[in-house]
Structures are given as C-alpha cells and as structure tokens.
Image 1: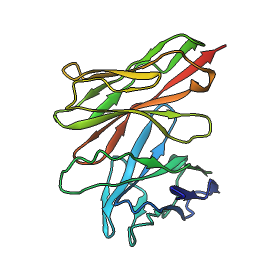
Image 2: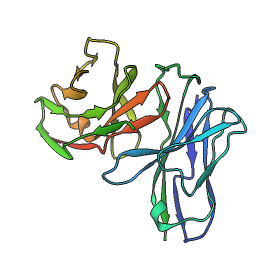
Image 3: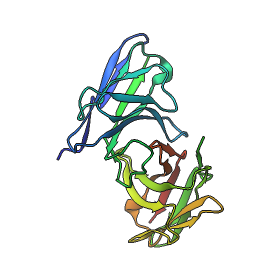
Length: 118
Length: 113
C-alpha cells in the first residue's frame, strides 16, 4: 500500500490564482480530512469527509472547497488564493464510522504540501 | 469546543535522560482518545502513543509513556532514555466521537549529545 499520497509537495501561487491539492489513499478508508499547519498553531481541521458523497466543515473552512466523489480521493480546492493561505497542508485518512461511534483506528497522514501565496 | 494546550513551546533534554512534555485539554465529553504525534524535519506526522479515555491504565510504547489524569484533563508524555532521533516537534491531539481531531500548538524537543 502507498498509504496517503499528496501532490504537489511544493507550490507557489500568486494572489487570486486557483489550484487543487490532490490527496489519495489506497487503504479503503471511509474518513478523510484536510488540515493546515501554521507556525505556533499546530494542525487545524479545514474540511473532512466520512464517506463518498459526504463532506463537512472543520475549524477553518473559509476559502476552501472539497468534494468526495470516490472513496480514494479527496481534493482540496483554493478558488482564489490569498497570502493568508500560505501554510503546510496535510491530508489524513482512517477507517471511520459515522453516527457518533468512536473509531479507535489509527489516523494516517500524507507527507504534506507546502503552499506559498505571494 | 474542545481545546488542546501545550504550554511548553520548547524543551531540551540530555541524551539518555528523561523528559516530560505537558498537555492539557478541555472537553465536556466522556468518551474520547488522546494522542501524541512526532513531527521530524521531514514533516511526516508519526503516531507515538494513544490513550483511550475510558482506560485508567496509562499507555506505554517502549521508551514512551503517558500520565493520563482524566479528572485534571492532563495528558503528559514521558520519554525515557532520550535519543538523538527523538528530536522533533511533538503534538498532543484529542479526538472525540464526532471524529474530528484537535491539536495543540506543539513542543519542540531538542536532544543534546
């Protein structure tokens, strides 16, 4: 298994440009999520999905869109990049059950994408 | 909303010594998990140890152990016999039945030879 993969590893954008960060997993995990990591703030949840066709907002969703058309893929879209979106982005996945059942499964993280918006 | 606080931005330990990293959290839920993740310069997030809130026994993984105080909402990580490879950022994290994960701001651990 490749685990959780992210592309690209690095990206530089100009303000107002759009782009999609790709995330894929080959472990048949239902739950996938996107985080951003800023200095001194740890990781903050942007969006998450508990299964194909289902997405929801996390702590900091503004400026980002997601979709989940397949179990394997969970792309993150920046429609109009802003300098405040300069960050390191992590995708993660795990087996997960909706409906309030606490999953004990390990969460796996991708290698991260470093995004700079000028 | 749940919050996770790591009050030590930086810590330093001598090789082969023991160091304890602190973490406190705030929640009104009774069922949850707590985690410690290690992030080396490669940026990869590596799970170090996990604690289920319903378990009274503290989790242990080789040189890593936790001191889980549920009533005090405290979850510290003890690293024994510190090694140079332990140098990294360490993040404390909380996850509830609603599946989202909250992270602390991190503690940068330096190991001196």
